[in-house]
Image (cartoon, rainbow, N blue to C red):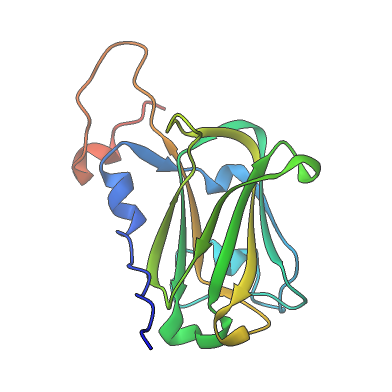
Length: 185
């Protein structure tokens, strides 16, 4: 009997941001969960700390809902999962759905995770490989490792592509010193 290959970790999303091609837009959304244990909710899911996590408290599927105020271009979803720390709480099957609201969500990705340890990058693209435009993203945990009931997710990041300047083409500022001053306020 062979064991399935482990899900390889992706790069740290902060490295994606440093390239200047994407930016994190999770703070522009309203986040909600299907359930959570007290002290293990949205705040822990979004606090940039890999030691904290959201823990569901109910029957599957466990849902993370990300709603934007206006139609938003989304390129990548990054989820941090750690099988070594969370064991039976680690998701093994995830569905990513998009739409205008809860009533018209359509699944665009389904992932099978095998003992993940690190960032999982989920490209959110249409059939032409272009980033999707949506009002809502829903992440549904359909199953956990070892048939676990509740789930842990340590972090979720949502990325949009950085648009070129309409004033003219400027070189990308990718060093930390340049990035500190790249926005005109």
